[in-house]
Length: 111
Ligand SMILES: [Zn+2]
Image (cartoon, rainbow, N blue to C red):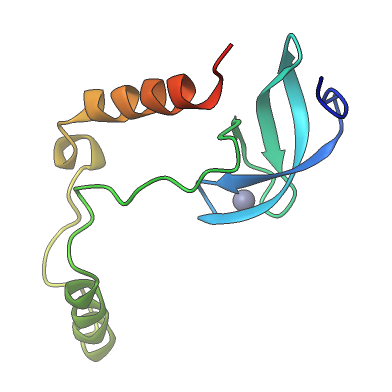
């Protein structure tokens, strides 16, 4: 028996993919007694409930050193030297994400 079932409008901790932080969220959708969707109280981004788990770093995120170096380059230049890549072209492995979601779901509930 859980202490109490979640209800719509409850405030719970969850990971916000936009803020990339564990933050307060409103419960906006339930699936039975399980929280299905939440809305970040900080940026109002609605997303699937992630069981307050911070996802592992993605393969596509390269070394943080490189990004800070890129920031330095951008800061010192009036314009970025390269045009931005299309996000869809930069991420061909979308299936890995779903596999990870399934793994997280399977790990969470024994029943
Ligand atoms: Zn947020």
